[in-house]
Image (cartoon, rainbow, N blue to C red; front, side, top):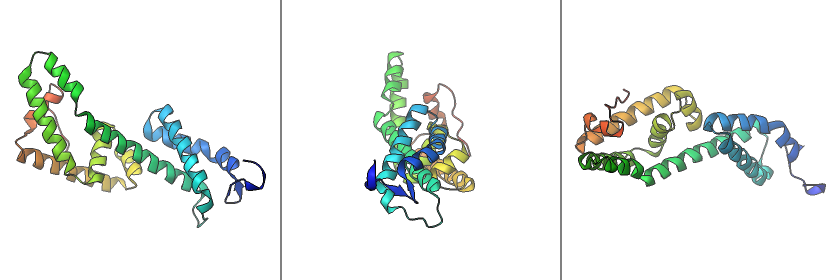
Length: 194
């Protein structure tokens, strides 16, 4: 990156942009993901995308740092969406195998049935509701963290979560799954919020 062809953003060479803003982007990614290795991967991807799009950055009152954090936030969202998709593809086969090896075929069958109906119900949620449920209950993110990831305020996240859980209960109940059936996941009664 030397010579006259070096990329500049807001009048600064890209290496200076990286030096100034990498700590803030790194802090954001690690806080949102909770894993320093994955967080650093997202930092690298953030700056790679910024470099590719740098010539399109137009200073319209938005700072370079805010632009970089926006790129990072989108990558964090993508990370959680991909994690949700991987979870959907796994279909809890390890849990099913564990239940089957305990010589409890009735429990394994019930788990399989509940699991299938749960995934059917999750598919009927909107994409943002699915992501909200995943972040809150699978990734164990707080309401403020979920709000930042989704680009919404905390009240909107609480309302979205409430509507998603209410819809899941209604869909599961319509498919013959009651709250008492959900105990197979934890070997104890499940207490859904709301």
